[in-house]
Image (tube, rainbow, N blue to C red):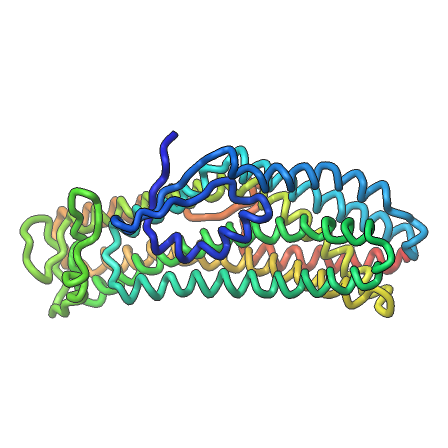
Amino acid sequence: MKKLEFRNGIYTVLRPLYYVCKVFGLASYSYVADRRNNRVKSDYGYLNYIFTVIWLILFTVGFPVHILELDDNAFRSNITFIAFILYVISSYTSSIVAVVWVSIIKRRRFLEIIENISEVDNKLRCTLQEETYMNRNVMFNIISEIIPLTFIQCTVMIYNISLMESEPYYIIDVIISYVPGICNALILFQFVNLVFMVKQRYSYLNNRLTYWLNGKFNRPTCLNKENERCSQSDRAVHNVNVTSLCLSSVGNVEGTLRQTDIHLLRQIYSELYDITCLINNTYGIPILATVCSMLTGVVFSLYEGLTYFNEWGRESLTYGLTFMVLFFKVTFFCHTATNEARSSRIVVEKLLLEGNCRKECIEELKMLSLQLQAMTNEYTACGFFSLNLSLFTSVVGVIASYIVILVQNK
């Protein structure tokens, strides 16, 4: 079995998310560091399935147990009882789907995506500062996701455990019942951070195209036999100002862009498109199940919080708002990533309108424009709907309508 290999910097950035996902059975692999080459290799062994199998058994057993333990007398109305059952079913179902799909069926895909992103980075000639900036943004995004999730879940669990100090059995049941929600959130975090990493690469390419448009030339990407970037000393020279933009297909004149540079850009865009398709293929079904679970939870939590505010309102409203924030973050990141990819077409068309390019380069730019139009960058939930801000506004309207109907039928 092939062991995937990627840059040590990407591993360092994703390490906090990896450890949390590992504990909850969403990472059935491990890493082997190669300090000499500053690379990290993946390792697939049967021992890596321990947490995955444990949580899968707990979800499979806990699902029917949790349903059978529900007492309709504990709820003020049948509507609340039915809404809660639907939420429990969707929550456990989505977590089981996530564990099986991501950790068993598609367990190699996450690392394949990381490896492909690493290969794109080998072709992008980023400065050390730019690479550090991108990695820090991803690290900050991961930390800002894990800390609030930990705080909210721990606070709610401690509060519920304090209410059941005399019943140890129910304490364990309460702890396990919160794990499906954590697994669903972690799947969203994996997906969002991969989308964010792809967006950063598109943003860097758009900046390079803008430099060309403004008469600044980014020196051509230099690759050695191992497909690695040039040395750090060569990175220092980044932009050379020229009086006018001149695209040439031959020669190696400093301050002159060549047809090979545009062709290399086409290859990078093609690889980023393949990464986007791989992300959709890997996370389509889990994202679909998780989004349905979250929206069901939002309807139940907001309805319960608004109608029974004095008893369970605070906890319910907290969960409802948390679900909405997570859903907004997913749609927002996907929306901005899609717009970043689409903006490349505009810059390329402006380059063509400059009209000071040689024939060979004009043809290459036209092919790049057609390629960007054909390779549309869009993130979907298994193809059923696109993840963008339009979806978020539509969902908010639907949820508001459902809550009004439920309140009227109380």
